[in-house]
Amino acid sequence: MPAQLIDGVQLSQQLRAEIAERAARLTAAGQQPGLAVILVGEDQASQVYVRNKVKACGDVGFESRLEKYDADLSEADLLARIAALNEDPAIHGILVQMPLPKHISPNKVIEAIATSKDVDGYSVLSAGELVANLPGFRPCTPYGCMKLIESTGYDLRGKHAVVIGRSNTVGKPMALLLLQANATVTICHSATPDLGYHTRQADVIVAAVGRRNTVTADMVKPGAIVIDVGMNRDDNGKLCGDVDTAAVAEVASHITPVPGGVGPMTITMLLMNTVESAERVLGKQQERLAPAAGMVPAPGIA
Image 1 (spheres, rainbow, N blue to C red):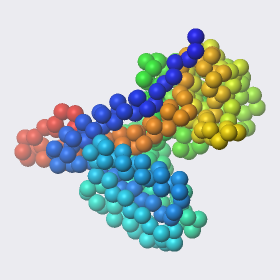
Image 2: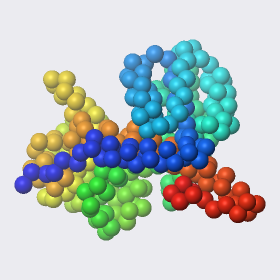
Image 3: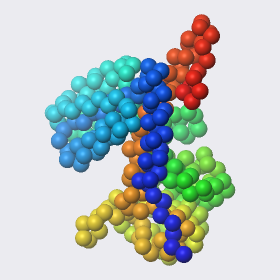
Image 4: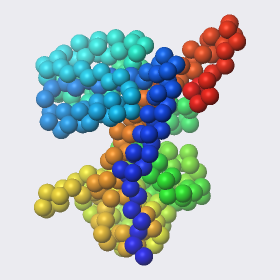
């Protein structure tokens, strides 16, 4: 029986409806979620991504603040702008669109964002919170992958998950999130000598290497869940992932399509992190007021 497609578009719509409800409650309480998006330069792909993020904010009732700068903006000026946004109470999340011009250090920029507003979850402190299983912001793509797996009703406890890829933005945090769900996790990468040996033992495969047909049908255990994070182009220029989807779908129980799987979830989880940030701020405000005024945090907010 062919695998069931995990529809990232449909799940994203469901989650955005929930986010919009949470944002409406926050706005009514005087804490409208706010996301600042900074774009430096004229990269065409970045402009598309930023436009989609700003539109998504408006759709769920957030304040979105788009700040566009010429490519010759100095690193010092960018860091100063981030510092100002860190202190802005109307902003709950800060996102600097990558890539940046070569004269600006992405690491310096990421680390300049306050951890409380690091809704991309990329900073060293955010990574440390994830490692230590502390409350923090999870990187958006792995967070979305977890929601996709969760939507199947599959219990990860005690299952074997194989993550293909070890990037700081997807592979490593993906493995940590799977560990938090009590899966047994193997990380494979370019130096792994026999990738198929590991994937054939996996109950869940997450492919995130950016190379076509990395996962083929003979590498998949019957009934496995396959999450395809890859974004590539085939010989005809058609969008495809890291998985040979048509063939693997004959073996797996569930699989994400490309497009329409992981992609729609990434911006959605950015929105989720931003609304969570605003909820934390309001919760802290209510905690400060509660002893003096006998207030208790509003249900579903704190």
